[in-house]
Amino acid sequence: MNERLAPFLIIFAAVLWGTTGTAQTFAPETAHPVAIGAARLAVGGVFLLLLVFLTGGLSLKNWPVQSTFLAALSMALFQPLFFTAVNVTGVAIGTVVAIGSAPVLSGFLEWLFLKRRPSRIWWSSTFLSILGCLMLFLNKDSVVVDPVGVLMALGAGLSFAVYAIVSRDLVGKFPSLSIVAVVFTLSAVFLAPFLFVFDMSWMAEVRGWSIVLYLGVMTTGVAYFLFGKGLTFVSSSTAVTLALAEPLTAALFGVFLLGENLNATSLIGMVLLMVGIGLLIGRSETKGTDSSARLSFKG
Image (cartoon, rainbow, N blue to C red; front, side, top):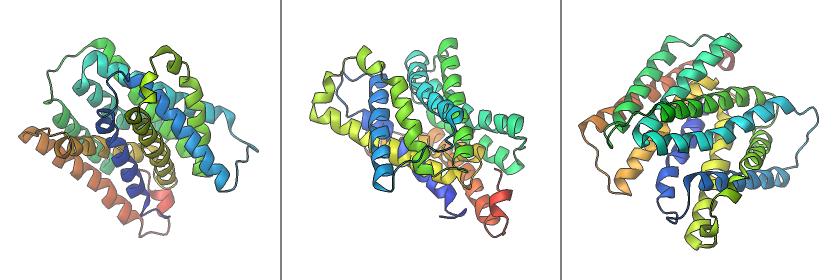
């Protein structure tokens, strides 16, 4: 794996995340989104731990406890914050604010704490991608701006940004598989109470456990492993912007699998998203020609 492949690993992870919404539409009607999220993290954590032990085991020597705890807490908070935001203020506003704010917050946190000033290319790419995301979602249903829902969505965006920054530091010191295994197992422990709050009888159905298995293994285990691998060579702010391939994937799956229609505004939004992501991929290709690519690719 090298710096040229890193952006594509993150985009592939985002593509897997983009299938989450479509997959959840096939879950039993009694399955609450937050319960699905908690079960998904539990399955993902167990899957990743099994991979770790099958590939050589887990060494906790000199393990960064505080950073791991912060990454796990951030990921655990993202689930209920995002689903609550969507329920309160609608899919359009909730998704746009959460996903759109994450790159900006990530860039700001990098600038503030890591003293890495985002480049012009990153700003241009992020602006185009967020604008595309806005155009893609805001025409899907009636827009209801609820202050509490918006605040929850911002909290979700901040949670993902913090997770990306902390994980970027961790994967530079420890194997990415071990990092995501420990982080997601701990996240599952944090969200375990939700498994007792909501009705989980739907898990006994074939459709129920098969959806959770897919979400846990593919959209959590595999996806975040790829995201962690990509973070080895890509800054957290760049990674979060590349992750905006998620709503693009969700929109395409909605069209081809769920029969949704895209109007002209949505199509323009998709183009802007692709252009924005393409700018960052092009930048990584240019940096990849330099021997100092890993150090100079700051997003």
